[in-house]
Image 1 (spheres, rainbow, N blue to C red):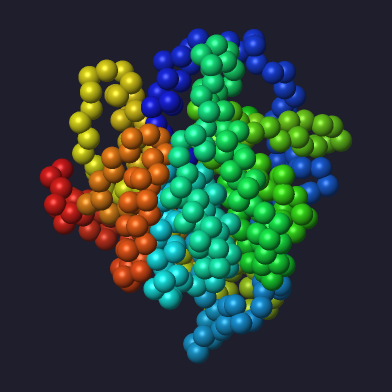
Image 2 (tube, rainbow, N blue to C red):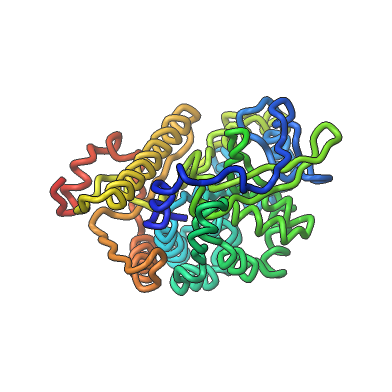
Length: 409
C-alpha cells in the first residue's frame, strides 16, 4: 500500500493511543521466535535472519519438480532462472500492472522461476506468477479500484484507542474475490511444477521479515490463509490493523502480529533465493557455475528526486518526510540487490516509474490517475523497455536522470 494523508493523522495521535484498551495477546517468547509455525503447516513460511536450511531445501525440491521445457539448458550448458521482484508502492502498483501486461504484448516476458512481492507487490505477484492468461484480471484490479475498495475510515474514538486509523476490510473482501478457485488451483499446479511464489510480511514482535510460500499454501487449498497473508503484507502500521496469525511453538499456542512487508524492505530480499538455487544445484550434482539468475525488479515508485511544493504545516511536512523515507528505502534496496547480483554473476534488470510522469491523484486510490499510470507502464513495456542494468548513480548520476526528463532538481 502507500503512504498518504491518513497515515499522518497517526503521527499526531500516536502519543494518545491507549495501550490499556488493546486486545490481550499471547505473543511468542523471544527464544521460540524461529520455531513458531502455523499448526501442521511447517512448509509454508520461513523466518529470515535465523539459522535454518528451509529455504535451500525448498529450492532443492523446486529444482527436482521443474519441467525441462520451462527452464531449458542453453547452448553454453547454462541454465538461467528468471526471477521477478515486485516492490511496494500502493496505488503506484498500477505502473507495475501495466508494465507486466505491456511486457506480455511485447512478447519477451519469461516464465519466472520465482516471483516475490511486498505490499502492493504482494497483490500483483499471483497474477505475475500465472502469466499473460491473467492479464485482464490484473488490469481490472489496478484500473477500477478506488479508495473505498481498499479502506474504510474508523470513527475518531476507535482510531484513538484501537490498533489503526482505518479498516482494511474492503481490501480483504477485494482480495478474496480476486483469488477464486481457478487462480488457487493454477498456482498450486505451478508450485507442483517447481515454480515458487513468495510474499513478505513484517513480524512486529520479533522485528523479522517472514517469507510466505503462497504456492505451498495454495497446494493445501488454504484460500483463507492465502488471502490473509496478502492482506497482511499490505497492512501499513497505524493506517491498517495488523494481521494476527495463530501459531504453535514448544507445544504451546501463541499469536503473531504481522504488518506491511514494506516496513522492512521495499523489494523482497531475492538474494537468498539466487544463492539457494546455486545450493540446490550442488545437491543435484550440477556445477553451481552453470546456474545463473536473471533478476527483474519492478519498482512501483520513482528512483530519482521528485519536486513537490510542501505547505507549512505539520501534516504536509510529515507526509513529505515519510514519502522521502520510503523512496530512499526503495533506492537503497535496488542498490543492495545490484551488489549481491553482481557478486553472484547474475543478470540485473530494473524498471521504475519514469521521472517525466506526473501524478495528480484526487484521493488515496484515484482510479483515473491509476489508469494513466497503468497506461504509461503498458506503453513503456510494450514498446520494448530498455532495462536499467544498474541503479541510478551506478548506471549514471541521479541528476542526469532528472535532466533527461526535463526536471530541474
